[in-house]
Length: 244
Image 1: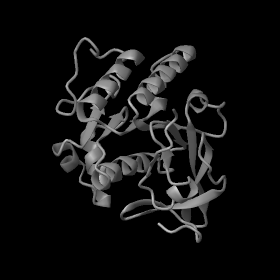
Image 2: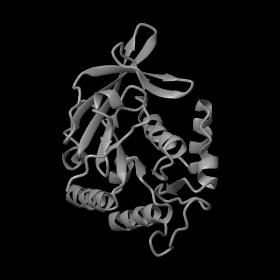
Image 3: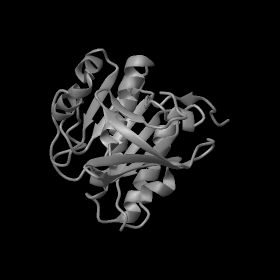
Image 4: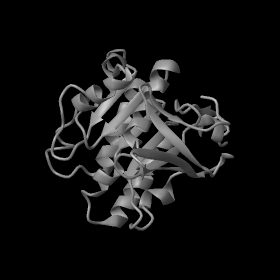
């Protein structure tokens, strides 16, 4: 039977337009151009889940090093290292051609500097979820992952396998992807249960960021475009009808 349990997002104002949050065990694609707030959204979802809701989390990075990630989010007062030390967060360093020791023990048979096979990455993620009993996961980003493979059908198959494995573990996941107005509909949009689109535009002397829920299967949700802002504590929706 499909789960009706809701997972709170940790983003002030967002749960109000999602009838309480994400559906447990489902996968959501978070898409947008560079600078729209995707990585902050993803880490905030994990950090609040681990710190406030006592839910172990996994972060898969294909772009920044774990050290950079921990340093970047100190500006919000987020102590990523403490969550790692407490066994509430695990960072998988899956950057192409480089793995950083001390975050996830890697089997050399899975990765020796060549392209990481999709199935092996999925196995690594699942084993990490099992290790700490993770309830939340973020992959940042699918775009970097897909760039390693010329065969788009292989990518789609790999994504479908990954999503099925995540749902089998009842892990509520966010897959981050880059998007722009000139490309075709990304593969991940077809296979995910939900799609949240972040965007930004220049208004006078400031950048205005926005959020829109394009799809969320099984969840009543608003289709409006909402302003969002980055404060000294993270990201939040800005709307007079919403209370953080």
